[in-house]
Amino acid sequence: MRAPTKITEHKQGTVVVLCVSGRLDASNSGVFEEKLLGLIAGGEHRFVIDFAALDYISSAGLRVLVIAAKRLAASRGAIVLSGLEGQIEEVFAVVGFDSIFKTYRTADEAVAAFIQDPAAN
Amino acid sequence: MSAQLTLSLTNKLAEIEGVSRLVEAFGEQHGLPARVVFDLNLALDEVLTNIISYGYDDGAEHEITVRLSLDGHTLHVEVEDDGRPFNPLEIAEPHLGGPVEERSIGGLGLFLVRKLMSGLAYRRQEGKNVFGMSRTVADVPVRQHPK
Image (cartoon, rainbow over all chains, first blue to last red):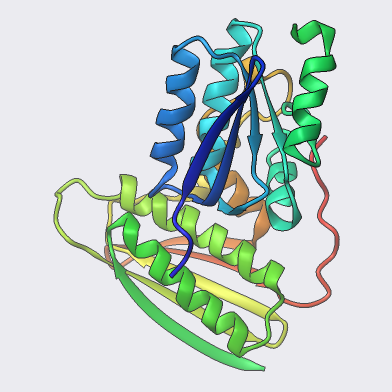
């Protein structure tokens, strides 16, 4: 059996860190969409999404990121990504997401960069 | 090297995972690079998701057939469905440049298919959509990324 899709959430200061593991495809991206858009609707606006334990992403998962980023652009919020590796990193590059999402090696580095960025405070 | 695999699924998104497992097994059996298997599974996922999500109006169960064939260093894939006529090659490319506000939300799936696979071909035959794609399995050049 493949690992089921799992999303864990914690907060560091004003930054919400979501760690997504398993797969983000058409069958299970709905959970990710509800979680992320729900947090945005609740007023959160700074996100680190860590994909270090993600095995697979299709356009269904990519779509959620674009929708969330569009909503956040209106509230001067942002999503940054961490843990992109191998094939998944390549998928992000193919669709040109490397130009709309800042990426960091680890979630800790992403949070630190968020906190140090005066424009984001 | 020559090998073939034909598999069928019904029009449910949950069936795609089974397809990807069989494709992985086919890849292992024939020593295909992990990157090729990943790209093939992603392209197949996108094509099958489109068919299952938008191809049928009647709520009934339909069979979709996937044929893989390995011919030397080229892998050919054909997907056949009896849904409404749909030519994926007629879909416009999404807008991927500029700030996020101007980006397309849809269209990423077929865009990925175009980038990951080559030799895309569509025909309507005997009331069915037949979509073909291929992929080199060896000496894969580094892909050009959009800037």
